[in-house]
Amino acid sequence: MKKLFLVGLFFLVACGQPATPEPTSIPSATATQILPTPIPVTATNTLTPPPTSTSEPPPRFFTEEFNSEFVHWSTLFASGDASRVETLNQDGKLIFELYSSNAWLYAIYGAHEYQTVKVEASIESTGSNTNYMGLICSYTEQEGWFEFNISSDGSYTILHGQWLGEGVASYMPVADGGSEYINPGNTTNEIGLDCLGETLQLYINGKLFRNIDVSRFEMDGGKVGLAVASFQEVPVILGFDWVKVSEP
Image (tube, helix red, strand yellow):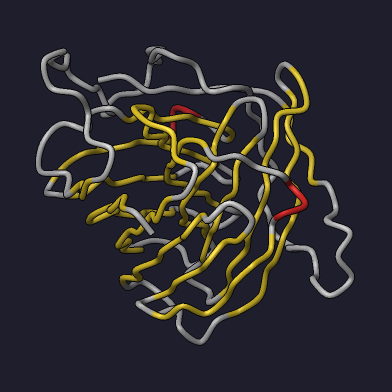
């Protein structure tokens, strides 16, 4: 099986919104642009998308329950020790096992781009409570992406990521805080993200709890994906039971 990994330098760029404090514990990470084809590395037990039939186009809207091979997705390793990170598709779950501190991984659905979209997922945490588990929308190499993460410690954050150049990217905090709707500790949470052009709608365990105006970023849609990250405390073990991509 194969794993994508990329190395570069991340910087945090302040949002500039006085009403919104900056996240205090975003892991230091490195990354470059996502590559069009998987690159093998020495670590084992990574995802390997099988050959797909050209007679059946990949679905635009779907629910992925990970009962078969992980088709049309690519994993992106952004930081940490690649030999101590594993991505597994087993037992009906997509499982990320992060034994490296400050590791950051993405999985991008590359078959389609969306101007408006709803992304949902059910995620189980069985490792450290200091983690990120989240969803991505409006991902493009030129304009960046929006990232909605929650943590088992009860906090959440919205980031706008953007490539600054070859091998250099920035994260701009958009919003963060705590939510009573997050189930803390080693348990399961369902999260959702509506990307509606100039507005993001955030869901936690079936509750729409925040609308965020992102018109200043002038994003015009893009790909969707998943995000996981560790901090100093490891292991972080996160299992995606299902992922749903639908019309908002």
